[in-house]
Amino acid sequence: MRIVLFGPPGSGKGTQASLLKEKYGAAHISTGDTLREAVANGTEVGLKAKSYMEKGELVPDEVVIAIAKDKLASVGDKGFILDGFPRTIAQAQALDIALSEIGKPLEAVVNLRVDEEELVRRLSGRRVCPGCGEPYHIDTKPAKAEGVCDKCGTALIHRADDQAEAIRNRLKVYNEQTAPVLGYYEKSGILKNIEAVGQISEIHNQIVEAIK
Ligand code: AMP
Image (cartoon, rainbow, N blue to C red; front, side, top):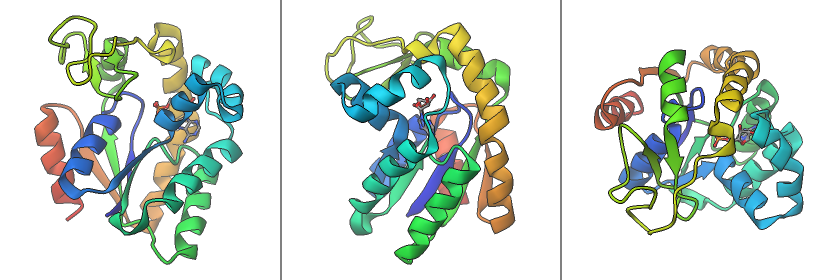
């Protein structure tokens, strides 16, 4: 499996990537998770990325492309699910070049479609475990004990970029810089559109059908 999960922030890429990883055993590569880890560890990459991320801006292409290539180089034959990468045309081109060099082109780009009102509702109620990455939502998927991860017991966080102003900016950035990438994949004929509203398991089944 070599796929990209595409879609605006809050469209469920992380949630669906976890389910696909469980089903197919492929590597889940999230540039957002890797960047957050770098920020938490205070690495050089983290220091570069922090201010962009807090404002909901995109981290510069060269930084993110280097991260994605590094991760891809370590997945071997088990395949990968890219989540949150590529987000610009330049990133999509760099990905195509890197994969064609190793003779393993993308098989599908799954676009999770969700309208903007629903995205704002999802993002503003989102909480996440900084320990294991498990996502929660205050209304639709609350933790069993308030504010604590069911899986690993770590205190949940409300991401700085899930606050109202950053959410608005992330959606604007998505519309201006990321949505055009869809046209790029439409041309190559590997784009699959999924209406990503409703039960998580139903959306998962639709994705499984689309990538068969
Ligand atoms: P995510 O968890 O995928 O929503 O990513 C969180 C933040 O990390 C984004 O708002 C960006 O600031 C940064 N980021 C993640 N992936 C990329 C990417 N492919 N290109 C640029 N910035 C990214």
